[in-house]
Image 1 (cartoon, chains in turn purple, green):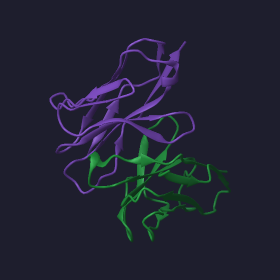
Image 2 (cartoon, rainbow over the protein chains, first blue to last red):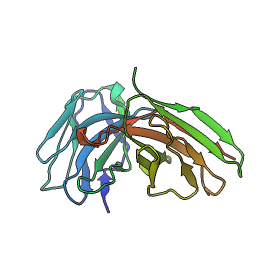
Image 3 (cartoon, rainbow over the protein chains, first blue to last red):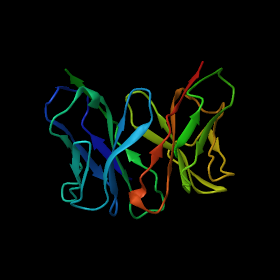
Image 4 (cartoon, each protein chain N blue to C red):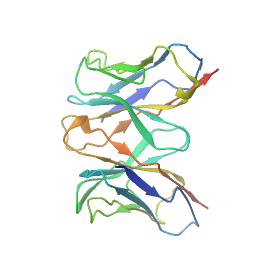
Length: 114
Length: 114
C-alpha cells in the first residue's frame, strides 16, 4: 500500500537557519504530494502541494519539489522564524485509485529558538 | 467565511458510552473524511464519504460509525466497541475532483474517555 516516511524530530534550529525536512514516499501510479502544518492544539493547514513530477510547490518561504526519480518531496526554507515552530506532515493522495483520502507521514516537530 | 466546524473542542466520556462528534462544512465540498491522531503520530483514516448517502471504511473503522444524510454534515460516532477511543479527531473535506485532492481540515475534537 501507499506510505510516507518522514525524518524523525524534533528538529531544533536557531532563527534564520536553513531548514530541510526529508520526505520519501511509496505509491502506485502518480500521486499528488502535500505538506501540511499543525500548530499546537489546532487542525492541519495546507502549506504547499505538487501534483506532478518536477512541480515545485511554494508558500510563505517554504518550498518542495516533486522528485519522481527519488520518490521524494523534501521541505525546505531558507531562513526559519520562531513562528514556524509547529509539526509538519508530508502526505499523498494516490492518483490511480478511487480512494482520495490522504496518507500521512508521522510528522516532524520543528522548534525554532530565538 | 467558508470552512469546517467541529464541535465540541474538548469532550469527556465514561467508558462504555457512545459519543458523537460533529463536523459541518459550508465549502460545498462533495467529499468528507474523518481522521484520528494519536500523540507523536500521523493521522489515520477512519471513514470517508465521496457523496451524500454513501461512505466507505478507512484503515481503522472498527468501533466507529458515520452517516452522510446531508452534503454539509458528516458526524462520527465513537462506540463502546472502540477499544482505545482517547485521541484527537480531525474532520476534513475536499472538492474531490480538482486541485490534487487538496483537503481542508477542521480545528479538531479532543476526546478523552475514562
